[in-house]
Length: 531
Ligand code: ADP
Image 1: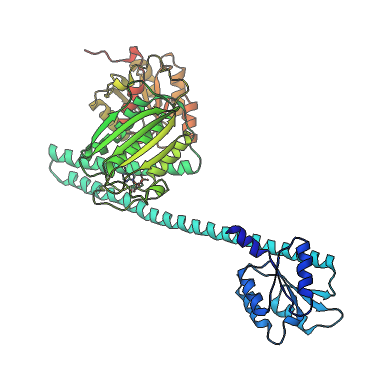
Image 2: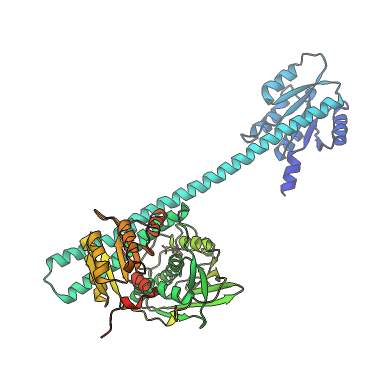
């Protein structure tokens, strides 16, 4: 098809109805390897021009007396980029009124005096074809420009939709939070009410945190601002960490989660935070896009140097026509009555980009609407499959906070005290201080195993406190976790350089902290003595 068009568009059309000019031109051009077509009259030529033309050789006696009108129509029908070259054969020495007419009406005309010389005919035709090729190149650029403009228009439209959705999604949780605060203020204290209201507020706040996290994350990835901190990580640990993150959503929807991992440890090479984000996103979606009381199956197998992780649900499924576009930014399926919590259509984009950054791939499968969905994530196995010694059996590790001393350092009293309270309620031995100097005193006096350290504090900031802790003999083996509002790569690098082990963005999720604490091998001397 394409070659046909290219052939048609490089033809020389000849109209020289009297004498032997047409025959002569055709044979000279054929000899030079240039394709040409001889036309019978102006109508025939106009028809051929419509089909495709490289250039036209026209004898002056074929036009004039109004016969050029049909030709003119054909030239006018040409698209804006097209200006077919005409070579008008005139008689030597004559002042041709027809030539003048042709120049004025057909536009792109070269006059060629007869008798023709072979060399000048061939070279004139060749340069006409060359000029025509330039026009075709302009056409390609215009097509490309239109395509890009269309893509931009589409992206712009989706962005507009997205902003409207974002405003809506962020506003939604605010109303119940405001109402709840009002209720708490005006109602007489009652434990049942307090519990109900605070649970609702927590759900809504968690939802907002998730939305904002996704937003920040996707913008960081699109700007190439994310660097992976690769390490060897056991799949079972990773799975537990991810499930902890998604547990509130799964439990709230009354779903059952069935985890089926191979008994032997499987080591992956990757950034644990990002890998867990991938799986938690898939688990959240499985929980969201399924009516209450459904089932989620999580499994893994090893095939050809890769681990294949499957997250399957018995939910609303994905229609075949939506499957190919499901990973695109801002893509969302139809809203569904069972869909209690909307998102922003970026979760799966995040998943795909993060998986690809890990040299893996992700695939969505569904037999159609109502038939459930399955997401398969393929990731390379770590080259060395020997688990780190002393890491124990991660799958069997208890999922509660270890008995560990934790020091919280934050000048924001509300932030520090509420986190302290939360950890205390979960059985952790906690001390809260509100400044760098106090923190350093506590290192000596309290000997924590883990320090949760705010960065922006007056006087001595978190970086300096961390450096000083590291210089202290008791501080070398402590786990230092930065707790900050800043999560860009340069912020993470700075905390790393100051000696932190981890960097968490506020507000830190209790489940994330729990999983992080569980992943530490806490030095024995820092463990609280059990009674
Ligand atoms: P969001 O959930 O915010 O809409 P995602 O990028 O996570 O955005 O998902 C995009 C779309 O893919 C969703 O709107 C939904 O239609 C569809 N989808 C994702 N996961 C599932 C699933 N497990 N079952 C059914 N549909 C899903």
